[in-house]
Length: 320
Ligand code: SER
Image 1 (cartoon, rainbow, N blue to C red):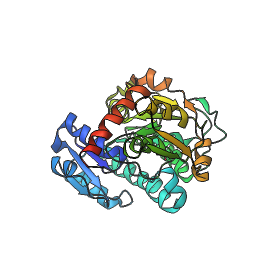
Image 2 (tube, helix red, strand yellow; image 1 turned 180 degrees about the horizontal axis):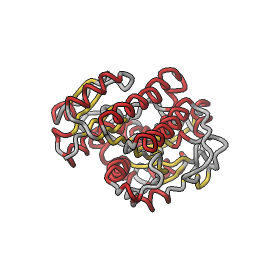
Image 3 (cartoon, rainbow, N blue to C red; image 1 turned 60 degrees about the vertical axis):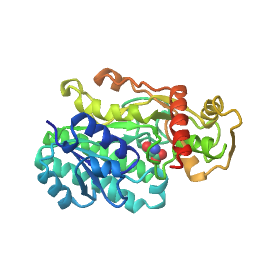
Image 4 (cartoon, rainbow, N blue to C red; image 1 turned 30 degrees about the vertical axis):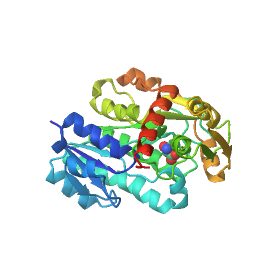
């Protein structure tokens, strides 16, 4: 039986991944590590909970020893736009934090899942059908930390045999926890605004194509990769994965199919625009498909229906 530690368990991905891991491996076998934000009652009451800051190596070490942890999912990070506002903190969490996790994993023989991102690419990368192995010269601190994390993870595997694995996530769309300050957040907010106000002001210009994915596929990706046969993995850190690629007009029209009166205008955020334009329009994820069977289940239309249904129910109950 696995004993898992999730660092960053109250974030956008962590809040749902921790619950999914508890469903699959048993509540007592998944420790939710969080820093400042109060965990939801669901997270707090369903299994062990520990305060953990990725920048505090002694604390990670203590928790790993206390629960006999053998697998760490390290989701602690500052998203791209927030990282540009505070690059020093972004480096501390996104690079020093990753180094700390890898050091503890080396010492205690833990497997490590580390998410990278479309942000690990930059303007000199081929942005259409972005290959698995290509130029990575990101122009953001978020991207710099992600490339550092990919390289460190590969190094710890080759040098010390630490079982490191990771994916390059696209923008993740979800209806449980809001993302905090990413460039792709608009693709979440648009669904909330369609239900709540019927109007959305988009911070990215039309024609800005980015890879995206619905949360259930993102959760499956992390767990399936960690369960994959290691003999089949050629890449490890990190696999391109994508489920769809769209620009603001395409997702607007997808929502409009169900909310015909929905309107959208634009007020372009220059920082986010610059970041988005340096990221892939669409990644080639064939290595993930071939090496561990990556196969997303959610397309834009199915995701749109589900997002709108869940958000409408929450809105009617006065939860949002
Ligand atoms: N969703 C992230 C961001 O926009 C990209 O990985 O920062």
